[in-house]
Length: 309
Image 1 (cartoon, helix red, strand yellow):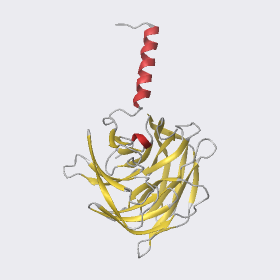
Image 2 (cartoon, helix red, strand yellow):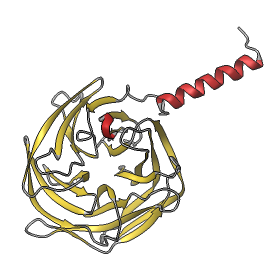
Image 3 (cartoon, one colour):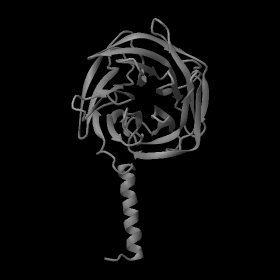
Image 4 (cartoon, helix red, strand yellow):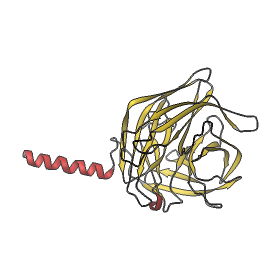
């Protein structure tokens, strides 16, 4: 049946509205958002790949919660499968952090992670079974007044290790500041950072006055920097967020870290009604795990092909 011009315009308008409502994503995207938390203390503030399930069909990820009071849960494990997620608590053993916002596995060191608070304190953890033990902790370098960190990533190249993190920024007047530095560890386990470089970054979406330009960072096998961005209008929303290709990072044979940000970041997906605060490229896969911290509405995860294998 041949449609009139007016009918074609109406059909296209309806299709566009539907895509906006569901959140745009590439073809082949897996399923829908799956709920993993029901309140403001169980959202996903950051996540790290832990390993695959025994049958290879799912993945285990560690997620941090931005709780602030003593005795509240700081860390959980999510087992994610298409159409099904299970959440189990992790007991925190050691000095308690305030407002964890990111976590990342230490490359080449099984069961060990670095977790970051909003004020820039890095905790080195050993996660065994259902317990996370603090090995050591230290501040990030170059912490400025009023910064608010929500992201952290580690890159291992040429036998060297580098860290990336960002002050999230706020709206048009305050872009995110993306930091990068070589990373080593003292013999007793403390993280030690080398010379710091920094770059300003503005999200292509969302762009309203409450936009947080970087809420998490992940790095692909080909050194692309994948970031999430979000806008938060209050504890009950509405929220909106996006995942973008922000640029590239390289680590030389002598450990020098170079970040090149795109003049116009490529938006890989837009997600109305969700506040993404965690993005993690899965090893050996084109997929990323996304996690949201939707405040009073809880948290959700979803798997999408934003990283090349």
